[in-house]
Length: 266
Image 1: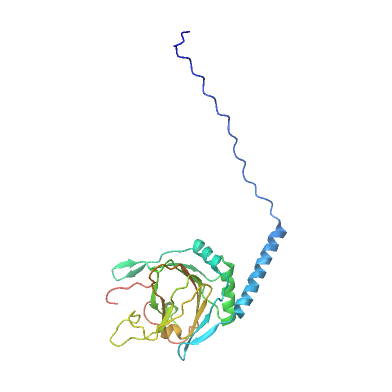
Image 2: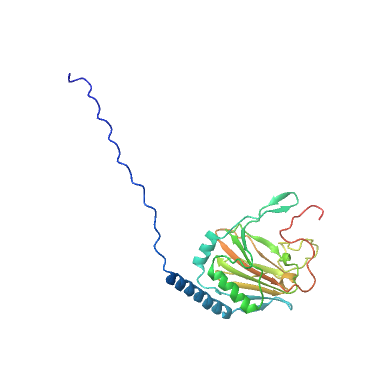
């Protein structure tokens, strides 16, 4: 064969067949170990409930019929809990009709109905401790996530409760310290808007930090406004966990609640 004649190429080598990966096999579960872990978890929650129910809080009288309890560091060690709730809660954006368009509130929210607590044992313990301390049954777990300083909620009353003469509203803070303000619910002279931001008469900033507990009681929802203002500059996220109760006594609130639609002429 001439030297310059093309030589036939070697046939391609076949790849050896690849074995299918074996399915993962879970390690056998020891029923006794599972039961022991559950028992330890339940015992830990019971101890936390007892500790929180006895943790000190300081009561401040807002006026003759309204008060706020403040417990600084009421729930200790909340950094990991904040991250867990931030990353796994069922957050959603609400939408409210305001006169001519839908408006998305500047925060995220989540709701866990009574009997369906969120999967966080620390919050379940806090719930039980608050029931024990205040002797009331709350309506579930409400969560609000303020992602940065631009998220906020305007000064308001919890009108959705309808009966505001005797209430208990507990708020637990996870995450960064933020302003949290209250002021008397009254109309300033010459004003028609109850939550006028320029009226700062009687304004108090309770500024809860991580693990702090605030509890508004008595006529605080009837006679006082509360809110979380916007903050300039960098600020970390804050999660507010809320429990609410009303005695359903007194004169029920008239008019729409905060989330109700607003229309011109109403």
